[in-house]
Image 1 (tube, helix red, strand yellow):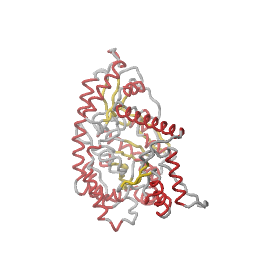
Image 2 (spheres, rainbow, N blue to C red):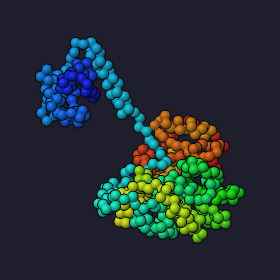
Image 3 (cartoon, helix red, strand yellow):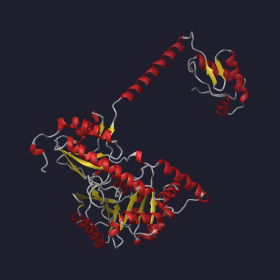
Image 4 (cartoon, helix red, strand yellow):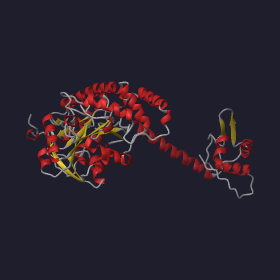
Length: 484
């Protein structure tokens, strides 16, 4: 619009100052023909003056033909012409600018659609908006007497009680409500753990979740990367180090997607017990599995109190809900109570109350069933499309669980070249090189594809575009192909 400045020191009446400023803005082309002026009420609030000088100024503009008043609509400028060449030039410049803006908008509108295989995104269409809105509203109404209070440092008691039952039924986790700590994400959990443990030396999977690694480094911890094989972290490599805590993602290793088998889980717990070390088990998308029965959590297998369990609602519900939870071993309970109020960052009580209601009424169980059905269907389609259009030039890995898979592309070209080739045809695929602490040269480049947030139609179109993008780059020499 335009700015009006009133000078308190001038002897000029306020209405006249207003009139002159608005009239000059109209005549100079700053305010164009047909522009709606601020209402008397809004201008009164803006300038903090009475409405009388504003009404007088507007009446003067109307009487001189600069403005018209339209009933129930407002005041509009009527000044479609000017003999001043500067005004004519300004008007032409404005039209030119508007033309450029409109042209850019049109180009953007018809620009090629981006098909995004984001490995971390989940589908918006599955979120139970109506039920969640109702849960939030009812939770606030039911807890009106609590609105002026901060709540429990470990999170709402009712939510922790319900989580005990949910975790036992779904993951075999054995705990009491007192052992559960509600948080607002993995970084806040790792921040608390780094304060909770005496150790300042942590082992992590290589490759592994970079947010965890970065948080530990920020907390002045030494981070030691431990390599993986096809079943997860190599315990023999772990045994060579003096480690007091190790972070693992056994249900669906991030980012490789491998699943730690039962025997290796037992071996890892034995290592922790023998070395008086702790295992930090991040069970981030354990609800989503496509092959075989779910393997019990490490925490449920542990009889010595060596596992700190972390779970989240981000992958199965929504990452917009910044809510996760930890199960702390009994051996760490006293220390945890001392520090939880100082280092734990809780989600809002509104959301905790709503999630309690969501769990208590069975909505979360029903939502998980819907999500599993949808993701299983999308997962199968993506695997089928890759096998139909890209094999034998690629190999699928890490496809047994979770919402992304790993694609080994059999070419001498780099990951960067593959990503750029895909982008040139409107497809976005991902490289998780930042998940490595130490740079590793793979035999073949590895690409990651997510499928939870992409429609089946776009998925098929995206794979066909990848075929178009990559075929000129793929190896044709049989010696370059993986043996079946």
